[in-house]
Every structure is written in C-alpha cells, then in structure tokens.
Image (cartoon, rainbow, N blue to C red):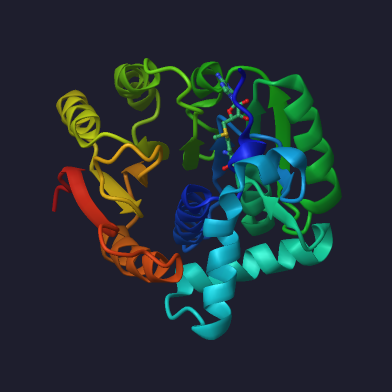
Length: 290
Ligand SMILES: C[S@@+](CC[C@H](N)C(=O)[O-])C[C@H]1O[C@@H](n2cnc3c(N)ncnc32)[C@H](O)[C@@H]1O
C-alpha cells in the first residue's frame, strides 16, 4: 500500500522533526540574507487528526496531544520547544483545533519575505492539497513558497545550487523501501558536489541499532562536511515495537546546534513522557573542523 502520512501525522517523530526544522530555520535567519527552503518530500501540508486515517493510526495521542497536555502543566524552558508549540497553536487558530501542520506549512509560517520555499510531493492529490493549504494559510510570512508535483530527489539536482547561495533542505522520505537508506548515502556526495555549503536535514526512523550504525559509518566515509546525528527514542533502540525513535542527520549544522539540540531534545523527551529505555543523543558523524 502506498505510504500515507495522514496515518502518522503529529506522532512523536513528527514533533521531533518539526521542532528541529523550526530551530534550524531560526538559526539560518540569524543572518539577514535570504535562503531557499527546499522540502523534497513535502506531504499534504495539513492533517486532520479526526480523519479516519489519523484515528486508525492513533499516533498523535503519544505525540502532539501528549506534548501539549504536558506543556500546559510544565511550560517549556527551551526556546526551540516553546517556538514550536507557539507555531502549532497559532496555525491551529487558523486551520482548526484538531489539525496538525506538516513541514511545508510550519516552514512557510517562519519564512521571511527575503526567503523562498520550494516543496515537492510526488502524489498529485497530496501536492494539490498542499498548494491549497499554502495558498490559504501559508502567506503570513509573505515569502514565496512554490509547490510542484514530482520527484524530490530529481529536484535536488534541478534546484541546487540556489541563486541565494544559501539553503536549508529537508529530505523526509517514507522509507517504504529498505533501499532508501543506501540510496540516500549514495546520493549525498553528488548533492554536496553540486552545493557543498547547504544545510541538509535528513529524517530517518530508528528501528534497528545495527542498521543505523552501518548507515552512519557509510555516510562518514562518503562525505567530508561536518554532520550531526540528533536522535530521540521513546523505546529501547533495538526492540521490535515498530518505530523506536526518530533521527535527524544534519549536514553543515549552524553554529552551536549540537548543544542546542541536546538541550531541547531532553526537554522534549520529558514532555513526551519518555520512560525507562527512552533517551536522546547528539553526536558528530563527521567531525566539525575547528
Ligand atoms: C514522511 S512524508 C512527508 C512529511 C512531511 N515532510 C512533513 O513533515 O509534514 C513523505 C512524503 O513523501 C512523498 N514521496 C514519496 N516519494 C517521493 C519522491 N520521490 N519525491 C517526492 N515525494 C515523495 C510521500 O507521498 C509522502 O507524502
């Protein structure tokens, strides 16, 4: 069956990914010069958590619903988690109380007029929905955000390097196919040859520890750009519950992201009710050259 993000929208991995995405956008915005935000696997932009798909998956209960409830008792201390929750609340005020925003809408709400967004989604129905969502709710920041139906990987080659010479690229594939991990590792050096100073974020599922170790090692052999792995897991990393944790591979992370991610990830783990066996970690896969 074709992957549908509506089953998973607002789950703990979405929350982890979106706090990280917003933190990276804000870090890039410390400089006035605009940048390209490229979302290669964009999804439909807005999910109704009351829909049949979402209720069948039921995953947002342990994700956004849990975090909002916990944050009502213990307001977040880190600016990253606080900014994310403000964004979700503000977007819900526009889109409805039981919705959850996808990465393009979260990014569109943060982009400035000098920035530019480009979102690629392969399923035509999803990409049409995304276009409507961004037209209706994504114009607050007044940045130009374009949507195209197509292959996000092909667009990496077509859109890089960007005219701004600055970019944040989110690569968030569905991992339906076990080949997605090796394909990403094989593709990354080519993408970096095209544009070596972009900030690239690749989301990945943590299911089996050995697979992740091998993948990180393969990437470390293939590229020279500083690269962080920021991970949050709610279940012991080698159990077979399904999705144990959520990882973000960040190539060329902005300054001090390692320390910042370590702090907010721990706060988020607490808000998610992370019990024994849960954890978070930030490590350099390719070391920063100082
Ligand atoms: C994990 S979801 C994206 C979620 C979204 N980034 C977010 O955070 O809200 C992955 C999406 O990629 C789409 N997709 C799958 N293969 C693709 C490809 N080659 N190019 C572009 N989109 C693709 C799927 O249809 C799905 O909507």
